[in-house]
Length: 231
Length: 396
Ligand SMILES: Nc1ncnc2c1ncn2[C@@H]1O[C@H](COP(=O)(O)OP(=O)(O)O)[C@@H](O)[C@H]1O
Ligand SMILES: [Mg+2]
Image 1: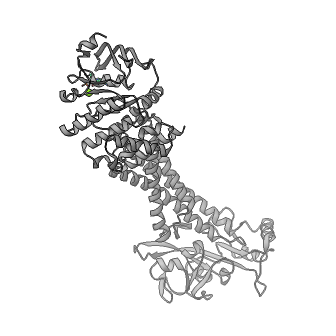
Image 2 (image 1 turned 180 degrees about the vertical axis):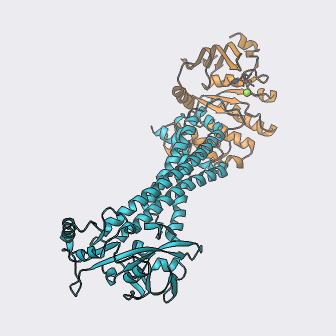
């Protein structure tokens, strides 16, 4: 096995709601190997989104360590985390989260505005990312002129355009029909296999989950899978 | 640095481009800002127009003499003997016959009907000597002729002829208890165009004014002429008179009214501005709310909070600028192109007619006021946008 790209170690996370403390994770530990394609299934409220938020540095654990490439990120400040996300993490959302007023190409370009690439280089990379998801001919379209599957492909292009190593997808096919979902899953597989992206995908759909190379199950904040329990 | 600049530019573009999604709220914001700024500009234009009119009135080379302490002609009184003494003063310009250029005048108010509303209003009727035209700058007879001494004739200012019933050339009309005939129309800069002139003796007789006058206007020679005249009046115990140039006299009059107009205008404009401000805050809050997911998405991508702040600020300033521009445009069309004029109460509660003028300075003040509304309205929502929690990504 290769070194893990990310490791959660003894992570605790809870929320207060109306004076009542809900504990979501109690000393959760999991390795995410470099180059993995993991699907995470689990009932609603089991903590799947919270897990992705912790992995992506959008949320902080109450306790424990989150290690990326040997560096502990849980103590980092907002702006350092933002820089780290821009360089290393691509997010893919269930409802695509595209900017409705911008063309597909402009949407895809957004992460590149955080880099020092020239405008020409940005254009080149946007074109490449759109090509990877098969949408070169839709670059000038607005999100509302695209189907759900096409919008999600724009979302994926945006996630990969700055060439991050880790892709975090929260129910990326949750709002799509079967055929569009399959296309999206094929793209994720391709990104994992050919472009070496590490992919962590949350899903409700067993068929989608089976496309991953490793299927994990989360229930009440714990993985029920033997291989995780062993870690 | 380049990156932050690009982030800000993208955030601004996202805000501006999303305005059509909140079209009616944005239009209402622009409209309310335009209203507040428009009212402010109207009052400033009014003050400006009034000031222009009064400052256009006075001459620098004509002295006006009033009784000590009288600030307007209607409160003043000068006896026949005093007028004689003034005639003998040094420093006065003279006509071809060697007589001093000097006009003693009385000032009474008469009733007249306005053409547009039919309402009755006070007009000033001035009893003048033939020298009246020579002791004024910029007054010229444009139609007919000057009144003849001792006659029941009137020569009327062009604005009076335009705006009041019956003051047409050749017409007869009743003023006071007597019948008059309009024999001339004169044009002038400033207040005189809102006056009606008749022969001094006739006015004194018909309005029981005795033998005195209320004001004396005299043309003086050069710069020392005024000083000589003032020194003479000062030294003569029988002349308890104030001597000032006509220009100074009208400038003094304008300052009071201009202050008054500004005192009414600013509070009203500020009330409307507070309303516009509330509207702007509401619109910007709704912009921030409706774009919360977009903003959170940008943050997840790695954008900082600061660009969201600038995005909202620029949107607010943009809407405010449109409001200011709209008000300026309407103001320009109504005041300067359509040529609105108003009547107001002038000296002795007589009607003075003058134009609104939208000057560049007034327009600039309006635009600045609009931008201030935008700035204040955008601030709190912009701070809110910059601090929006990131964890709102999943919501539809
Ligand atoms: N910001 C938050 N504040 C309070 N409670 C939260 C918050 N985020 C998630 N939760 C709660 O934490 C639990 C796990 O949520 P989540 O990770 O979204 O579950 P899943 O994605 O598996 O459906 C749920 O009970 C949810 O209500
Ligand atoms: Mg979830």
